[in-house]
Image (cartoon, rainbow, N blue to C red):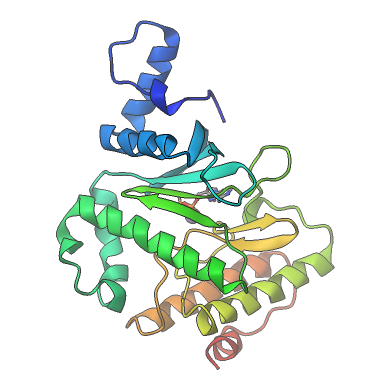
Length: 264
Ligand code: ADP
Ligand code: MN
């Protein structure tokens, strides 16, 4: 994942060595001083032991690899750290997911961008926890959330690299394609019926194949069934999944059949 960075080495000083320069570049591009402060605190508390390079750079967040500290809890020893960008504009169009959501309705922070990002990370943490605790839909174990920093179990391929997204996964055969398709439809239903969540951004980009199982990730925008747009989001999720499997050439269920299957 590029060069390794210890959180205590992250500095804003006018370093003269190339390492200082590399750290400063990392810092300037993604990590603001407050974020670094939170990472240091997580290191002090023994959650993180070593902060490594970037796994993914997204529009709203970057995901980093880290090694777990002695207090991280029962995980494999590796962590994925999702850091929401503190830039303001990105979160503008996300308000509709939180607006009308019962769990956040009375939040006075809704129009303060920095607080909004914190709410967003906490929302992902809570949704992830709900899914993980349900035990019926695979998801990475949530470990900690602090402001815009979310710490979770790292889904590894075995050789240190992250497990592939469904988009990048190479299927063994057609039977496996069909198996994963049916599994995902079952997971959409279990998410709805057991976890009481609609993913709301489900696609081959937000599912990871790990240990021959489909893991659901990226649940910050997920909503409860009582959200006024939950069924629209659900239809969209189903459409995305069918669109992906259509390209793989297997026989599909009709979207309205899947919709009934999920909510019934
Ligand atoms: P974004 O909002 O940028 O889409 P995601 O939560 O989807 O954020 O994470 C981006 C990418 O990082 C994922 O597509 C996946 O490849 C990788 N990733 C995220 N969480 C984990 C994890 N727990 N273990 C391994 N890789 C992960
Ligand atoms: Mn994603």
